[in-house]
Image 1 (cartoon, rainbow, N blue to C red):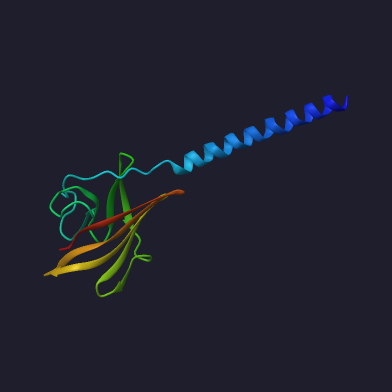
Image 2: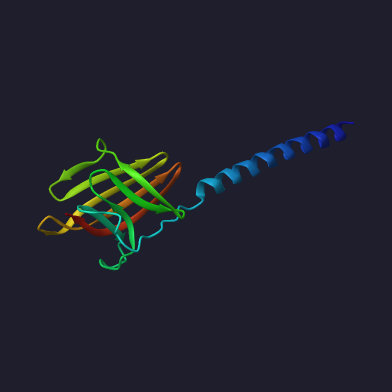
Length: 151
């Protein structure tokens, strides 16, 4: 009888722990699903002043934009195949110093943070480089970027 009780107890314990393990594995997979960043072939959606960011491995002029913005109101990114228009958060966005600034754009659970430093200045803008961080829910993607910013 003791052996039978022990067997039943072990069966219950292992069957319960297997379910927990499956749930934890499924949750981990959901959290680790990657964010896929798309590119724009042109910046026609932006008129006037703009931030035009490319992957740091792409040359300026290659027209593989990861992020577009008009500096003041909105930014655009393609995430997992969907074009997302984000609003600029003027409270979180700030100039760090004369050559560096942080721009923050948000929409629902999506947040894009640009942390850029000036490399080369010209009349009303310059070439910048830095890091773009995209947060969507509990997922995060960081990319080294560079591009032109100005009017």
